[in-house]
Amino acid sequence: MVSSLPQSPRGETKTIHNLPPEVLSKIFHSMTSDEAWVRPRMTQAPLLVCNISSHWRETALASPELWENLVVTFRDPSRVAWRMDMAKAWLARAKTRKISLWIFFFHMISANPIGEIIAPLENQISVLQLTSAPIGCLQSLFDLPERSLPLLRRLIIAFPPPHFSWARKASVDTQIFPHLEDFSISAGWSVLSVQCLPIQWAQLTTLRVEKAVMPLSVLCAILARCISLASCYLTIQTKIESHPPPPKNVITLTHLRLLSLQLTQGFDYFLGHFSLPKVSTVLVGTNPMTTLSPVAHTLHTALASSTLRRLATSMYVEPSMLLFLLEGSPNLRELRMYYDAEVIRALTLTSQSAQLIQHVSSLTIVLGAGGGTASAVSQIAQMVSMRWFRSQDLGRLRKLTLCTPKGHTEADSAGWDVALGPLETAFARGLELQVRSGNDLSFEEGDLALETED
Image (cartoon, rainbow, N blue to C red):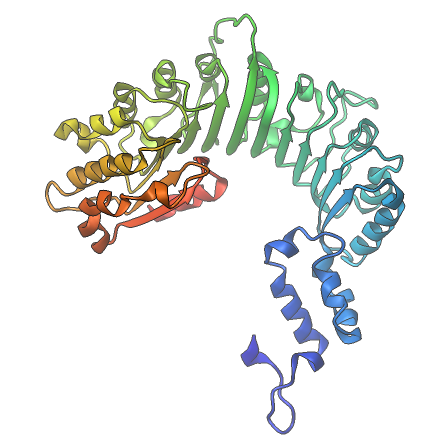
């Protein structure tokens, strides 16, 4: 960017304060990749540039790409009208560009952002998030005329009102959001009737249902309609109900490649409904205290295991069950799991069991809370050393990630240098060690792109 700056007749590079508008606009646009600009609040991002000088302000106001994203928060009841006016003025500067809009409600308001902000821009809205929206606001959104918001690709509904009616009042036959591809809903309560929302479920490629309470039968009915899904994230508190036997005709989700399945119960019931022939990335679990054993065989049956490349489990895995899954997944490249001494021991017990993970190139292990992390690290190092150096061969393993529990201190890491001693040669030969905090084992859609790099 600096090398392209114009020069004065005397050959001197102009200062940033007197650059021509087209160059300034490019500089401003390059800044939009920063996280603070991707989701800017009303007092941030472009407005900060406008405050530098009148020249900068004029250039920024004339650059539509700076105004296509906005976060609106309704906190102070006395400032609702001001925020509405600011939002409309901000988004008007985007001209005809696609708009991404995130709206957060921290209290009830009488104004309706759907009618005042969204409806006038319905041919530009591409991403829309409504968090804690009141009933009237949501109802206005879902009662928009048929085929409204034609460019809307992603819709996020977070913490909707409990017992909200998702059915349209206008007509049960009409469809809204004709090109919606990514739908997310998260709530700490029941969203029993969300399947009544008249969107085109069959064209969704990404579905997220998180922190919700829902009967398994309803969840299965929703997924049965989502025949084009490529990525599916489910974190459900499944309601207790009498489970009928799985249907005789199993539904095939032909395009699904990423499945994150975290249920409180009913894995067998859920997986028994579907065939997942192209799934390559799976996270299964609820918490480390739940065992995977009853699920392993059903999971193995639902998946075409030859396509499985990434597996994560936040459940306790009995050694025999993990070996069973590994044996049926010859193309597994990444394994994420919670630390368990018995499991680590099983992976190195025999040469046959060790061979089951010889193709894994990335291994992530979450260490348990409390003391003893050094001893756990020592056992993991011994496992890696024994497996990958029997023939002085690093094998495919290229990355080892250790996740420390929250509150982990440097004192807790005392002895790690000694514990990792057996891997000194491995590090010298290219093994990457990463240590991070937390216990997040989740996969994202970006992980699918890594398949071309395997």
